[in-house]
Length: 416
Image 1 (cartoon, rainbow, N blue to C red):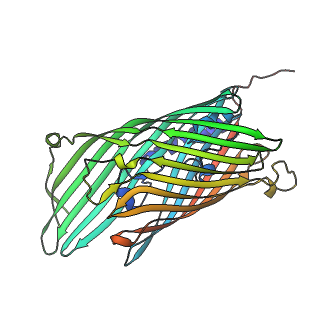
Image 2 (image 1 turned 180 degrees about the vertical axis):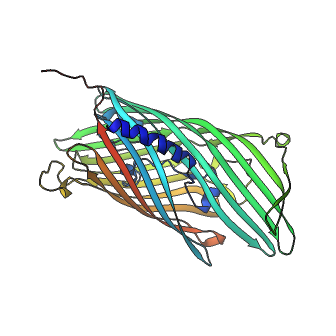
Image 3 (image 1 turned 45 degrees about the vertical axis):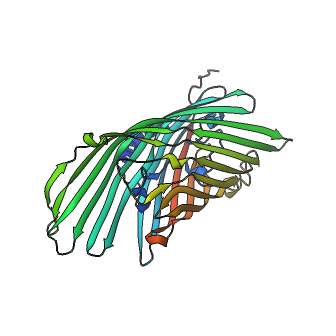
């Protein structure tokens, strides 16, 4: 029953993930858009920690965690983000709803698990107006990249788990600019499109050591290799009527002559180290540090002048608490309570101002019935950007809903 239900959902959600416009942030104008590789609701609500894995949940960012799976697990997640966009003079409220991931993982042998799924990698979605004297520029963009992935995790020796993921990223990015001058009948159009695809790999190692009879020490190391993307570009320029918006004399630019028809986008390697401590099935707390040499990134096709890239890094803290997972009398005692916080130096410098991101997360894992399936609810409050230097500050409130369903595969029938 669960299998048939998930297969039907997969077809619908796969189309929805591909078609959705996943952001309304003005900062998605830069790079290849807003990063959407945030993992499951369970991990997001612990500040985005990727180090923790268990036997009944998937961890989309840590392939080593698949070695812990004991049951086949289906997972899917959606989110709604409400934003307040504010500059020095005014503010605007908006929101966006997304399908965030759909995936499945299962054990194939003792301490060996595999998984695969579909999720957004990045999203572009903005609409900006800039007025300088009598000249008005309207910038808009949409699209994004999705990824399909295959992961395997195994435990070659006691306490040490290793894992690897191969990601195939693909999608279309569209960037448009309309420029008009007051009391001039015609304006100019510049429409650009990039069809992007490419691979990257994610490697992880987890170490767990029991301390005494009750406690466990956790260590994690992860490397997301450089994302090598190939971009097939096209550009249309021309004029339009400022009276009715009709295009006039729009032509295709010869990008071959500028060596811009096919370009490469290289997203630098990201490395993560983490430490944690906890009591199995009771509580856990951990911290992670990630580093990325984003200063080497460039997009030669877009030629954006007011953006620079510096090395990016992030800190994440989080954990969970379960009062009594075996309780028969109190449902609230079996709920998993999660919380965390994170701080990201994104590496983007716009108008000579660093764009940083801070978030506070919390959520609940609600058991479903008498099995190991659960409904996960998460909430995040955060802020990104600044109102200095003519920029925009984003304040956001994000609500996540994730479903984690468990089943048994590869179990031989026994006849008494």
